[in-house]
Amino acid sequence: MKAVILFSGGLDSTVLAQQLVQEKADVRLLSIHYGQRHHKELQHSTRIAQLLGLPHQILDFSSLGKLLSGSSLTDDTVSLPEGHYAEESMKSTVVPNRNMILLSLAGGHALSIGFDTIAYAAHAGDHTIYPDCRPEFANAMETVLNLADWAPLRLHRPFVNLKKQDLVKLGHKMGAPLNETWSCYAGRDLHCGKCGTCVERKEAFSLANIPDPTKYET
Amino acid sequence: MKAVILFSGGLDSTVLAQQLVQEKADVRLLSIHYGQRHHKELQHSTRIAQLLGLPHQILDFSSLGKLLSGSSLTDDTVSLPEGHYAEESMKSTVVPNRNMILLSLAGGHALSIGFDTIAYAAHAGDHTIYPDCRPEFANAMETVLNLADWAPLRLHRPFVNLKKQDLVKLGHKMGAPLNETWSCYAGRDLHCGKCGTCVERKEAFSLANIPDPTKYET
Image (cartoon, rainbow over all chains, first blue to last red):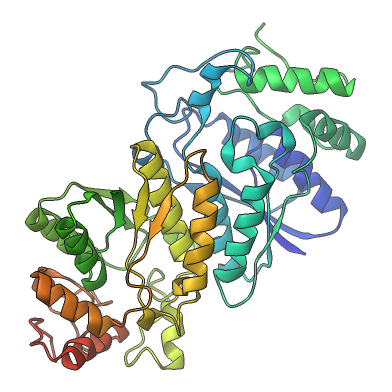
């Protein structure tokens, strides 16, 4: 497998990268700055790529934020909600069509370097709030990726039926650098501990029964 | 219909814009600079948008060129071929996964402004060389766009079975500003008359039996 991994520097994509390294796949990491409020994820992605010894490309697409208004992740005028993903307010963290955009960019990159696979770390915990994390979305994306060029592109999504705590267990078992991953939507020195993704991160370590190496503000 | 049109300022998307204006659709034009060798298309797209009285947004994504190397349209180190699209050399004008990237961006924009449709002007003449202009690609894209959010997005592609000469006839009949459209891959003052898209443009006017308003260098 020659795979471009959509790599945010978060927990999920780090576990995916570690897994493909163990499987001896030929791997390149691709991080895309799509106008997020902060660059913290990208700093962490660089460090993790070095630890894993993998080639890493960062695409600056910060102009995308202007095109996709209304998400609290890219639009400074929308306030960042705190609490659990289950809450209605968390819907403001949806970036319209984000996964299709990121996967199509990874697809273009894979085709241009002669790779045959795109790998991404969508998991079952994402589905209830993010429509473009559903397995049926991933299946439809693979169909269209198969038609985008004369040679088919495979979409590798091994976590689509796993929960986040399963990824914590898997990453811990493989020795993935979970302590170096970044989840928090706020971009301060430490994880805030209160936003949706911090709450989910804490919960995942707790449910996995694995000590959480993250330093939180609270 | 509330439609975001992928709008290059070329002949095909101008005819599409004119058609949707005539059909009284609510239309916004979206032009994306994806690292093409020149900005000529964008200048023309601005002028045509003004003529049609349509809102027009330009997204600067010139960093994409670095991610998608190897196409003569985005990579200055690859020479621009001349001649007919039927020729093997013309394959260097394929930008890997271009249409999926552009459609996914248009989809994100449509969702963020509450529009229900993406319109694009792929036509039958494109198919033999560009895999992502095939009707089956467009059908698969619509399936995935239907799953990208909780509300389905429609993909309007009325020209997918028409030839370029049919678009010239249609545009001429509707009074579309065909004389303002830009096709040429080279970015000089006049259309070069020799690159693939100039050859195709000339041929389309000729087959449509409509006087070609374009000034060519040759």
